[in-house]
Image 1 (cartoon, rainbow, N blue to C red):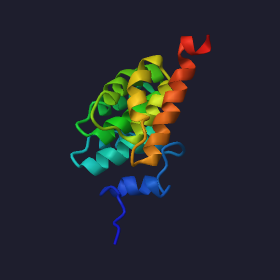
Image 2: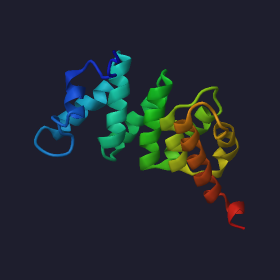
Image 3: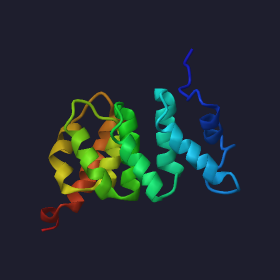
Length: 160
């Protein structure tokens, strides 16, 4: 039987189940602080989920950006990608160096391809052409093609 991937942290499970709020109420800031703390947890699953949730729901503050910048250097590629996606949604220029580095690697994750689309920078075009080649992963192929199209639209020569 398939086991659902979830964090061991009950707090993170509460956010996922929408039982814990990060936006409203007297505990929102304390909850956000705990979420930020969990992006540095020793448990990889907790770090992964905390980074993804912070990227999606953490708002846009200097503290959130700082934590995402740290997470974008995590040892785990999926966590780095989730952080880069969060950065790209807030400030594509901050995410761009992380996306450039990831696209030059041997493997790529869907969130990093999503971040590339949000960055939409011409410097990503050549590396994205490689990832946009057909593979056995239609979902990743579509994300790569969408990112490539976004970058091509942003390239000045494409508008001539």
